[in-house]
Length: 256
Ligand code: SAH
Image (cartoon, rainbow, N blue to C red):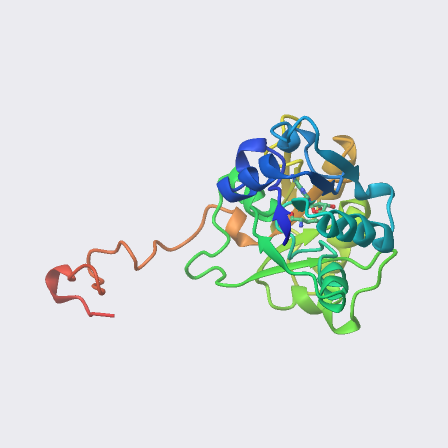
């Protein structure tokens, strides 16, 4: 059994208990060295073989995983955040399927969740947005045309944009082309949950300039939407007039 593990966003305490245990038990560890905090590997056994996948190809990764498995070793593949987002995990699972090697996926705390925690905001706000769009800009890797930034921006939903801070000026421009006002609040969180964590807040008009001034060029998320602002409705969930399965409404408010 091979375990894919979400290592979390950076802070070594933000890995799951299960993920941590599996790392401690592993004989072979392949980790995404460009982003996984090496601190999450400190509990590894002294004799564990540790490979950094940053310099490896898919074939090389698969061959290390299979080799370990064949030798009856405990093998783990460690991804940053949660492996289901921009993790290139699917192609690895497809290879393991082809080779009939069993695997399991242990989820992790994605960086977009750590970023919301860092800026102390809620992505889904009543009357503001009930939808979160996780996306990235086209860079060296293409994005399907129907998902270009202006198309997505037209929804005015909460947006979290991965892998794009290097093109922040173009990004802010395209978000406005899509319909967000220039004064829409926007923020960048660099290395959420790491010691170097940096937060830059602004609007679509001035964010690019502020991010450049802060020297942020990678490992950051761009967030856009009125959820960052201070105008919102309070939720029905804790509204005394609003009853639900676990609480009766005061003053005969309607049940839901
Ligand atoms: N699977 C990861 C994402 C991998 S793609 C996850 O769930 O978070 C790598 C991109 O994720 C980076 O370019 C950056 O946009 C974002 N990222 C990863 N870790 C981050 C962190 N700690 N803070 C801010 N952004 C981060």
